[in-house]
Amino acid sequence: MRPTRSSLTAATLAVALFAALLLAPAPGQAFSLGGLFGSRVDKELVAQVPRDKRAAITKADFELAVANEEVALAKLKEDLAGQQEDYAALATKLAKAQATAAELALDTARIDAVAAANLGKREDNLKIQDELREDRTKNEAERIQLKAKLDQTDVFVRDLKNRVADKEKSVAAFKARSPGLPPSATAPAPAASAAPAPAPAATAPAAPKGAEPVEIVRQELPAPPPAPAPAPEADLKN
Image (cartoon, rainbow, N blue to C red; front, side, top):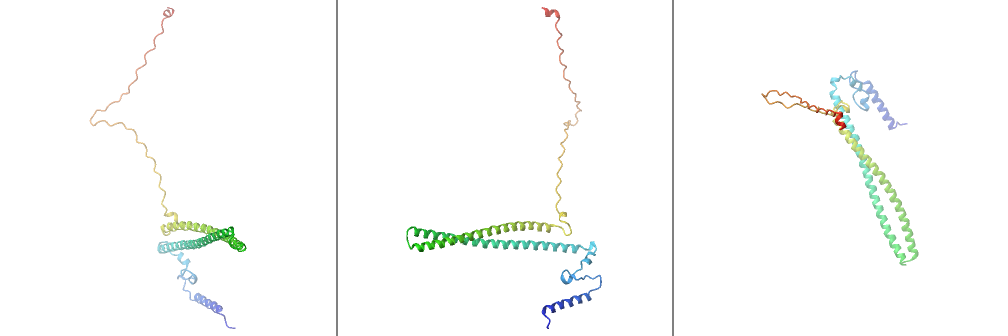
């Protein structure tokens, strides 16, 4: 039995993996199995780099994080654009259904007027009226369904708009950070409230230059007059 293409592919990958293990460089060189499926650099070796030599790594790691945040924002915008496109398509379908409803209403008014005037054949008029009534019922159900889908899509659009706005703010704040610092490290510290200035002490007016010092004498209030002496007992009898 001839080997299938899938079995040959699996065998080729196994040989390549075995060769990579045999040809692995000596310890200390930056190589790992992660190079076959992801990063080419061994994370354990990177962790051993001294702190004073990690500036370029920190900067590149920060730029990668910023790029990933922008990818997430772009995906949200793509989802928003898709929902907006669905909303526009549903709105067009609903507008057409409403136009059909208006056309059916016009035909109904026409046939009702013809029947009321005893024009045409009665059987034909009744048949047309029944058909129009059935079409209007179907049209109404279609419009109700489209309106429900349109309202639901509108909710999705508004939610995605809010998420995009929030993500734009978070990405802008993330970009404003310094590489290697937590988000709170670059946030401006709240301004301390200024303490109220003490009221200026009352000072006496300065004396003119060269004048003699004036001694302030506290004036005493005059004593109240003495109470009048009681009248003699003899005068009271008179």
